[in-house]
Length: 158
Length: 383
Image 1 (cartoon, rainbow over the protein chains, first blue to last red):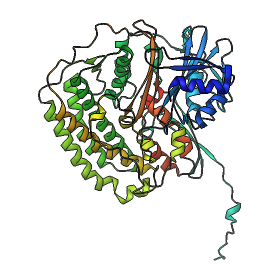
Image 2: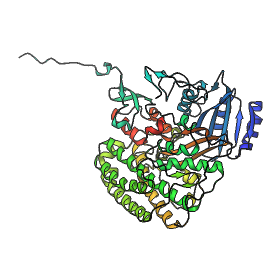
Image 3: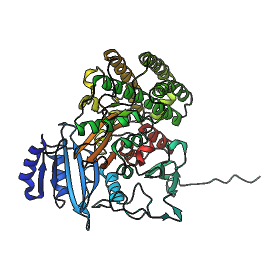
Image 4: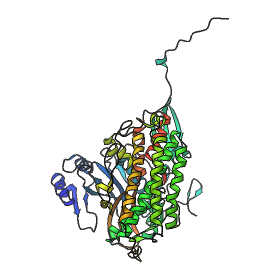
């Protein structure tokens, strides 16, 4: 299925929770959705017979200046089609539903996005840091991140 | 002498406390700086909690401060066992973003190098897996052979491990005279050693007893955890990007995709994951032979390399079949000569996340084997 066909079908089911479909991009087309109904949308994407996206290739956190974003790259092993799904959350309250119960690979990906970008995934069973030390402060991949001068008395920059 | 006192013990009423053990981060059998917190009941593993990040080098943060060309050496350092394959994914993504089409000669050289590196990676994987099971000799045999592949890479790029050889639109240097003969010699060597190793290691009774029926990964769990590469194919799923979504020129070659078929043990156990790697080496040899035959030696490999890499604004998700599974790179460009964001979906990172799921209920010594059969590189897990 092409991205705009998926967009039409999702639109008929979820209405205004599906925001836009960008097929003007030079390379990858994507769909932007609202974060409120994200869990239900992902559930439909995995289980509906027309979609069957059973394989979450990647989950990336993004810093979009005013907002933070999460990008889901989906693939279907049975139907061999792909989809890029995007969600935007405000930087002041970066909360979005966790999809860990739909694709279990999302567990570590979401922990990584929380660790490096500071996005909070509600409903995640164990949302702790994964790459940085557990007591690290701040979220390093944000554009306005300031590297701390020391960590436990060790200098962090030369 | 007094009468011997009989001890009457009610064994089923004995209780034991669970013990928390720490494996790593500095331990040879964790294949790098990985720390596993293991809860054991006697010798049975009940819970595994991996702690990552000991090799975290902020790859993604550094990428945002560098130009597109400067990223290539950093990509090498992710999966440092198969650096050629890593570079290839990146330059392919950039070429897709910029709309470049590289010449046939470049494609053939890239395929040959990628397949040679696949063989080198699988040799290390099978060798260290044997080492985990207590077989030392195969390790020496495979490292002896791998040296010949490394020599070819050294002659081409000047480096033995981190090559920095691929360029957006081409390659850093042309191949040398005698490249063809070197490759054919390697193919001959790899086949001979693999034949020897079948008897010595793979079909050895002790090895089978250690690895068959251990760490079984069912196919549906493998897909839910988004496993890829030999870990997924070991569970019997025929999924290989070189066939399913042919990139570059893979549609021109005739090769098979080996899967774990349960010839020994059951599909999805350690033995089946390992045999996929051994069989893949043979398929790589076939691809190399066909590529060398079809390749045209004329042409300039640096002809299309742009002076400045400045892609238009846009984004691309590129993935390719690396030796360990599919490596995905999500590259976002804002139209300048520095990337806005590069996200790497590390193959080993995703494959490792299945460890807590499949190692429950096995012996502690089997946990080391399960970890070895997944074939991780910590440079890619922590990035």
